Image (tube, rainbow, N blue to C red; front, top):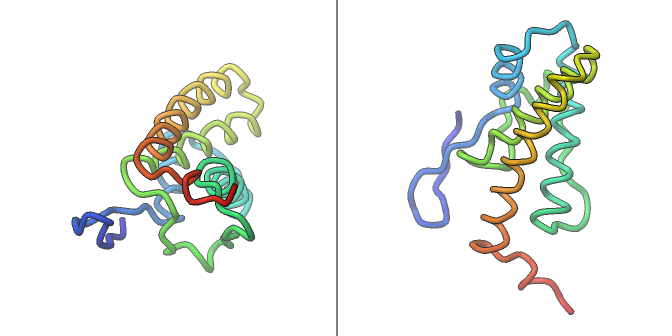
Length: 130
């Protein structure tokens, strides 16, 4: 994990692309390429930035292995969203649809927690022009 000062001055911890891949691989052994899994992480990051943080414009697109040590956008504890989404997509790709459904429920719960945190604590909609 990489750390950086948070808005409150305390250290904030961020998972790197490689750490997300390793954690998901431990949870869901698979034969998918790191490049394919990185594409799934790009999908999750794009959704988080555009739909939850309401960012406009381009979103980062990571490439493996070039960006393996790059810290992703979400800090702990919300960074688990990446791992849960990646686990779900691994199960989907392996045609394990029962596990995929379970993983999506866990992912959606984590995403809901993140959405509430962003909406109530960060309030990005307040910064948009009406």
